[in-house]
Length: 89
Image (tube, rainbow, N blue to C red):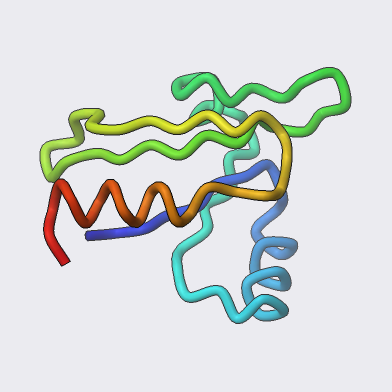
């Protein structure tokens, strides 16, 4: 399993955030908002992208999708539990 985050920040901003948060996964810069457009996470009126989590299988097929809006309180427990049911521990 691979976990990747993506956002509109620059690579330098992402690197600083990764270090500050001790984040253990990849974070991609979506400067052109192509991923956001593809997954329906476009920025709203304030320029903040929607928070969307997608689970893809090994072939890249969408398996699960979670839409959070723009809030920072995520849904990691739901995602983890669903992934454990689908893919095992």
